[in-house]
Length: 155
Length: 155
DNA sequence: CTTTGCCTTTGAGCGCGCTCTAACCCGTAC
DNA sequence: GTACGGGTTAGAGCGCGCTCAAAGGCAAAG
Image (spheres, each protein chain N blue to C red):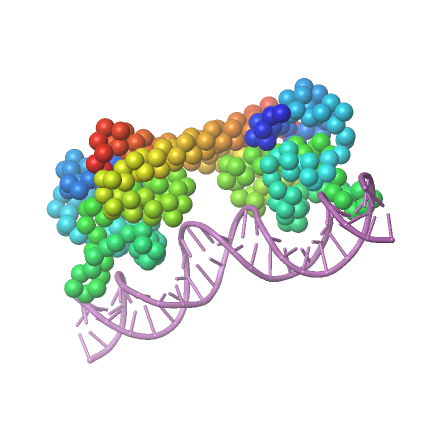
């Protein structure tokens, strides 16, 4: 069994494809080959590492749309799963939920919004790169401290 | 004039030195050579990019101790400045304020706590590295999206 | 039939890190 | 003197992203 994080890696980037998730992806994702087409909230939570609470919250604020079965229970198909993974990836890079919502809204509006989506992603990439530089600077300070402690107990 | 961010880089890592800030650092930091020994809150805010509100807040929660002049105004010496920069660096790498407070408390307790401080920094370094990997994964997804938009307007 | 456990909804609560407000004080410029 | 642009305090408020609680429904196991 892989970890939730590894599975996220495997699925990320594919949420917009209308085509069904490719078989090799399913293998990568460690899904049982006889995986039902629809997953429960508990399975999605287990798979992605999000809590069921968070998944319901995402739906409540309009970040996600999920169907229901006869009993009123949520049913997630493979595309929903891929979308959740994509959202998770954006969240992990600190994209605000409002921006993700906006992005997905653009997707729903169709091809005409592609340039805006591109711009949004480029801006996000720049932000990530700034953040990477910040973190590397912080890492340097931390390493400096660690080295100092290693060589000399006096701060 | 350098930016606040560049000045932060120059000062980071030196807060614990009891020695006065070295002259070459002062040059790096773009401080006027006749810099008074004590700075006002507005100067510190300008220098670090923090707001005066935030500086007061940090002091209120015990993260910082700052002296007062005759009129009751805060006066920051060079060591205080270096400490603020160090704190800022840790904050930028998402160290919780409570952990920074704890770390500075250990520093105040003296050399005996060096091993604990070392451990704390090592743990923090590991966290930063995890975060760097996460961000790089997110960057890959973002780049995938950008490439897709570049090659083909259809998502 | 009842227990058990997971599901549903709405709404409230929370932890973090600021950020702002109100009421007041200080020192320089006119 | 008085206006003005700083500073001071204690305390309240806020935005974000969850997280939990209450009250109840569904279905398989015993």
